[in-house]
Length: 127
Ligand SMILES: [Zn+2]
Image (tube, rainbow, N blue to C red; front, side, top):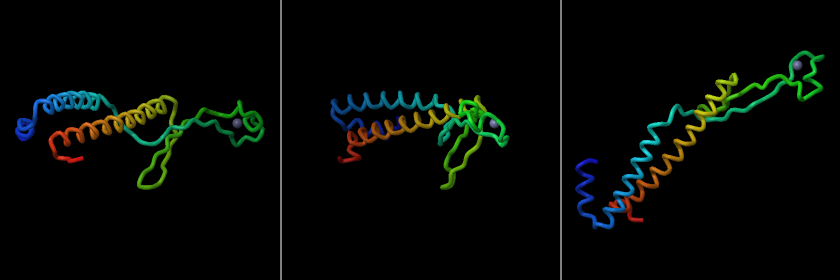
């Protein structure tokens, strides 16, 4: 905590100081969670089964005989959708990184909420 923080805190009543201490601890917990997050990517991984170019192949008549599964990761880049095929292991990894991304957003949202409450206690934000 910086010197400027403690200067402001010293001017607050004990009730607010206690609240602030609680928020600070919560914030530290979020920071620790944040530190554990691995790689983060956006988009989604879809699983597909395909028909092939051999017209005599069973995949054309029996949906169960379609080839695959094939995994496709799609994401947005500079306003357009980009995608690529992945094998099963990479699809698994990619889904994990997408989940990390969502977790990151949730933590960030909570950090912002907490920071706003602190700002109100500090009387930086009035409402
Ligand atoms: Zn086929």
